Structure formats: C-alpha cells, structure tokens
Length: 192
Length: 293
Image 1 (tube, rainbow over the protein chains, first blue to last red):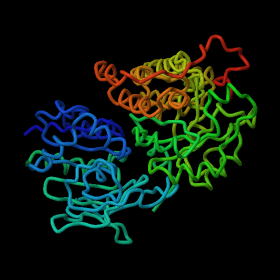
Image 2: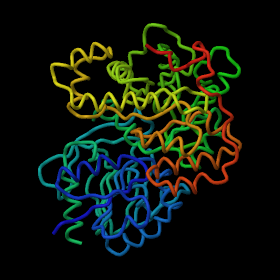
Image 3: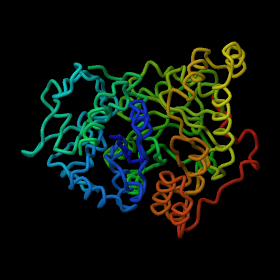
Image 4: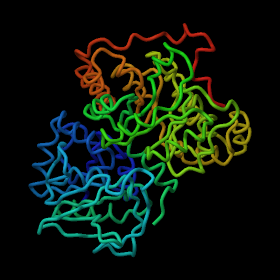
C-alpha cells in the first residue's frame, strides 16, 4: 500500500525529513494549515523550536485537528521539538498536543556547546546501533504505563519512546543518512 | 559521545530554518520576541538603527545583559562579536551563548582577518554578499551563513541584491563544467573544494538566512521566496510602533511565505513600521555591508 506522510512545515528542519522520505520512495506533503492534513497516512513533527511551532499550531488552528487525529490512532512521530509537543507535561506553559503520557524536560543537556552525537541501541530496530544527533535536546523524564521505552543513554536517561501509534525521539535521524527509523514510521503508517 | 562536531554546529542552524531570529538589547525585548514565536534571539548592545543614529564604536553586548537575556528565554540566544575580535568571541563562548554572529554591524576589530572559527566549540554565523564571501566564511568554519543586506535601514533592496547574487551563482554552479570551476573559484576567491562540493550538491553546505533591512511581513516573505532558509530581523521590530504585534506577523509571514492571503491578514493593523533610510542615500563610508573581507 502506498502511504502519504505529512511533515509539519511551520518551522524547523521539515525539508530534511521530506528528503529522507523521498530517499525511501515515499510521498510526503508539507503541512501548514488544517486542509493539508486531509488524506494523510501519518505525520512527522520535525525538529525546530517547540515554542515557535506550538504558537503557530495554535494560531493556524492545527492543534485540535492534530490532537484528534493522534487520539484516534493516526500515526505521529515527533523528533526533538516534535517529542516536546507530543508530551503532556514539559514543566512550563506552552501550547502542546499532550498526546503521549510522559513528562519531557527541555534543553536537558544545557546549551549548544553541550550538544552531541552518540551511538544508541534502539529496541526492536534491527541492524545494530543507531548514530544519534542530539541538539539542545530534551529527555523524557517520566513515562506512564502505556509508554514503551525504546532507547536510553548510557546514564539511563530516556531518549526514544512509543505509545501505540505515537513515536517520539529526542534526537534527529533526519540529520543522518540512516533511514531505519523513517522506514519504521512508514511501516506504522501503512499498518494503521 | 562527541561534542562540537560540524554536524552538531550546522544542525542547530537547521533547527532554526523557517524561523525568525530577532535582535534584542534587553531581557524584556527577548521575552517579547519569544512570545511572538521567534526561533532565536540575537543579543547586541544597540540595534543597527541606533548604531547608525548615534555613531561611535559598536562592540559586543554587556555580559550582564546577555546573562539576563539567557535567563529570560528558553529559545537559543545568539550574540554578536566584532569581525576578527576572537577574544570577544571567547568571552561569548564562556558565557554559553548558543551561536556567535561575527558581524559587520559592529565596528570591525581587524581589517584583514576574520576569526578562525574552527578553533571554537560554539558555532558561528557570518554575513556574505555573494557566494565567494559565503564560501570563504564557511572555509573559516562558519556553520551558518546570512546574506548581509544593509542593517538598520529598513530598506530591503540590499538584502534582495545579496540573496539574488548567492542564489544565482548557486544555480550557475549546478550546470558548470568541472574544468570551469577552478577559474570560477579564483574569480570569486573561494576554496576550490567548497566550490566543487556546492556544484555537486546544488546548495550551500550550511543554512543561509536573509538579513539587513527586513521591516515588514512582506519583506520577510520576499526573502523566503528568493530562497532564504529563514530571516533575521534587527531594527525592524523594536524600532516599529508595536513590536509585539509586528514580531508575530513577521513570524507568520515567514512560515506562510507562499500564501499571500495569510500574509495579507497577518499584515493588518500593525501600526507604523520603522521609519527607515533609503539605502541609496547613504554615503559609501556609512555602508555596513562592505565591512568584512
């Protein structure tokens, strides 16, 4: 089955996600207003500034329709800022989708000079370690019972999670040449 | 675990794409910018329009102000240092700023050399007027580029000139024969390996924002339409009559740059834009864009 994956294009590195999907031969569509959501099989929320993206989601009336889709089984994958937007609690008032039962800590590693790259083992992802790029990254500081932890750093901090149709990563697969997580998400979209 | 790699330095600029980076001089302004949806703020001592109006030597911002701005917002905080002033850059790195702008808007500290940016952990953004200048800065380690425009004027003409120059040369390079590239590299005074890699990829290896003279939502959208990855707005916001409303409208126009009806509605009721100075009325010694080598 062919799938069309939306990439939320309000701000951030949406073009990098679209390029990765193109490499996999998957059609993608930039999403900026509610009508762009029609007929999609999944949605990627890219890296960027979560406060900027959240405000634009609110102003252009996307917050509710995306939240409704996510709550009804529609696959959504958030990377970095996207992970923040999927959380129910980030410890500060900002517009959120609040779809995944987890608490996220923003800028958990400090400032830009604390950004880093490292190899991660991701549960259920064949092919060995995944080279992960963390940029002013968040971490998942607490999860509910329905949230499956897919990857942790060596110190035990959670950086990849799944809750049914929802996927969240604190790092940026779209900045690498490794398309395995994009493939995994496309499979989720095809199966949904 | 590896820190401060090119991927990580260039990566933060990729996260800022499609966004607006706003000049701020106080924590209050930084908060207004963040609330309006800015993707980052740029801390400096005076906005370019005030540097023009009041003259004198323009330097990096007071560290105290930078610390206050960092405490006020969660978005990245950038700060400007003078061209070639590697000690100001070291101070900004020690303060933990997320990006340094080695900027022609401040008074240059060195008339021959830019900062060796490879030697720093913190990433740098630099200005350019054409592809040669962009590639020289990238060769020195810049992880992000912005076209210079003419800061503090509110006149977008120079920003347009510089973006068209960069994008036009990019398009030329993609169709250039390989045996013509050495001469092109010599003519634009750029490293040949970077010229060849740009020709192969069809784009710069780093993110390229527009800057210098953006004063309205339509100006921001124009720069996006010409190929900018995002927009810096300096005096255009805090020298207008209602900064909070204008800042939000510029953010919306940058996101929806292809949708004229959204830009039209975002542009309603913004009050007065900054007064501005037509670029062509400036004397050559008043131009900021010609600083940098």
